[in-house]
Image 1 (tube, rainbow, N blue to C red):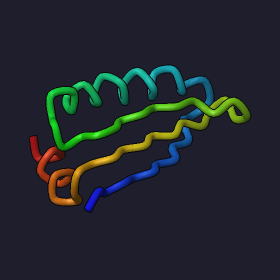
Image 2: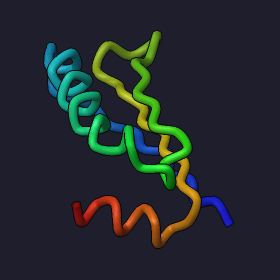
Image 3: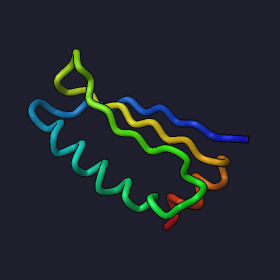
Image 4: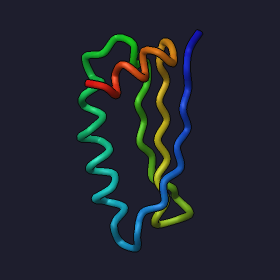
Length: 69
């Protein structure tokens, strides 16, 4: 069964670009992980501080294992 996460992050004023940079860099760790089906970082068009992160994994266990690496 697939495992999905939807994360809403609010960056401090004027820090969203740095938060997005960190999230994208850390997401590279999942590039070669076949259990990671999707890792998406998105900036809100309406809120200059809001960032959304969507993860889709083959299973919850696969997600937990990936975070241990």
